[in-house]
Length: 301
Image (cartoon, rainbow, N blue to C red; front, side, top):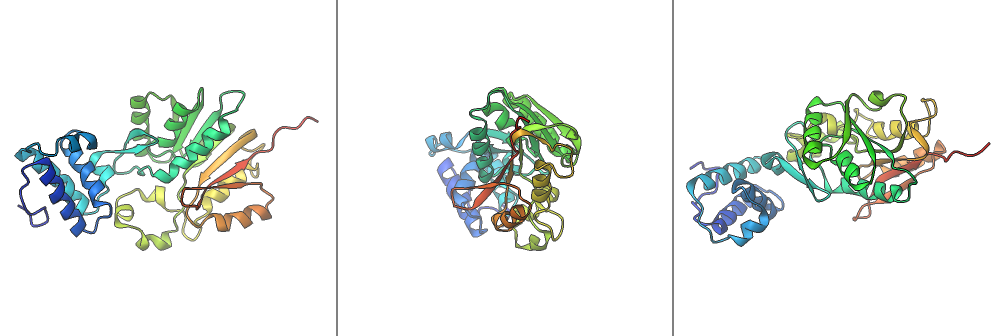
């Protein structure tokens, strides 16, 4: 047995969980209990509920081997979502893997705000998701907003492979386009644009958790050096119609952008000086997490 692995042979699911938790705690993994429950459930081909219902079930050598492999990988800081191949988002399971940004709970606020904005729409909205990654936003909005016509873009062909599979598996109709930013939809206008763009300055790369820094796609994490607000600025200007004829939003349309924890304090004054009306939506921790910009409604002449 490898010295890196849990150091006793478990005989039951209960013991497997206990040894795995001890191992991950020694490796400094936060939420070790939750992590090992997810990993053991994956190794046993079941879910957390059934793991708890079968705590005293004997485990065979192959089950122990699979579980140990998963737990050791996590001990080396590989994200559990890449080990299990999935991550839950808005009560749905999305396939993920290396090369795809792992969906975060913070991003669910974008869905909440989008649903609220579309709740009283007279007609189903045309929706654009910029930088779709796993497709979690585009697919969720397509399933949560009745009649929504959803387009999603990403620069990464690898990410789009995952997004397309997720859409097919979950039964969502989404148009996926490969390309950078708004380029793939040049000339088109949308009622709702959502984006979780890169907003981390590469200068703070070494401060990130190893799980994120060394495993998740760099292009989905990092903004251009010295310009953490690059994408928020560009999207805000496009939504306001600057640099593009008539803008990318329909009259009364909405842009929603996920922000880093400290972006709002910089973006607020920047938007004010440009006369761009906006609103910030706070997450459960009170951090301004979503920037909302609404295009002016068409006025009669």
